Image (spheres, rainbow, N blue to C red):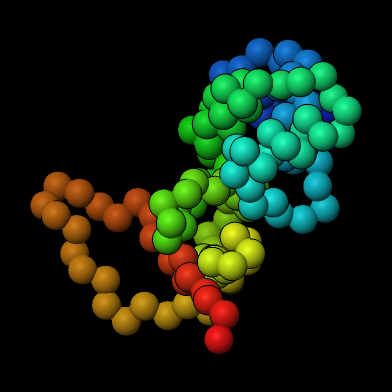
Length: 137
């Protein structure tokens, strides 16, 4: 699938019309060689620093949340309760560096959990993610 069709498909499956602003947001997220961890604020700065027409923080937030709800992004809460998003939607975990505020992927097979409690009656575990916070020695 071409990049242009892939972007249009992600917008469509997220319930979004492909406006110029949304296409620019989607390109910034999905036309990368590797996965991308970001906050809405950092994405806003990155998009608007490149001389692009100003896109409001609200437009970026709403577009990112629509992508998350459609399953194109993962939302990650760090120890400081800040929300990060991840373009890597496969099962994996993260290191979070408190000093640099950066996330690093950890392959899900490298984290071993010996006992997970049973969920409450009538519920099942949908997802399990581990965020390991790091600090300088």
